[in-house]
Image (cartoon, rainbow over all chains, first blue to last red):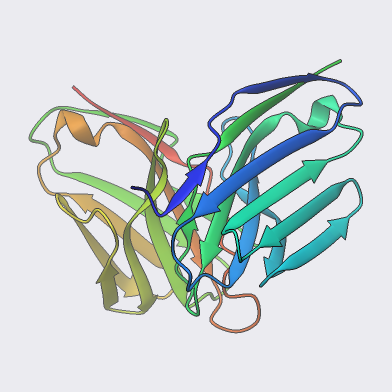
Length: 110
Length: 114
């Protein structure tokens, strides 16, 4: 079993829809939870991070962490074609090593 | 702006060749990482380095080695390339202060071994 499982997708949604992305994990030592966004032919870049459980909002993006269920989510409201990318969840315990999910490719149709 | 550059975007090598992938970062980061990215498997850590001449194995180090002689440069070496090493290779760096989990990635090198 992988340490981090991510819904593989792909997801295709119309412009303006809400996109919901999810990951589950098995390592209870994880405390830092991140979402990276990767555009085609580019390296991943950090989109959002959350420490421990709770919600974090940044513009159209909301990250949720439920440590009791070992489940994290990313919501994209009012999705735009420019949001079309692969989204990777990532997690870390107390050090600088990250464990990544497999990624979900999202396409937002104009 | 942090910049991580990788020596090649695309590389085609033959089975058994020795392959060098170079990575350079310009932000004076202490940590550097090599990952491979494969469909359905995500990013898997090959090696990382937290200081010059220091290295630690990641999750899949077999068939690879690394070199870090200068702080800004981290090299991945495939001693004898095999077809199962065909993949996208990503280099990343991060600081040991502040948001150390924020890794900055290069654009990747797509390696094909024939």
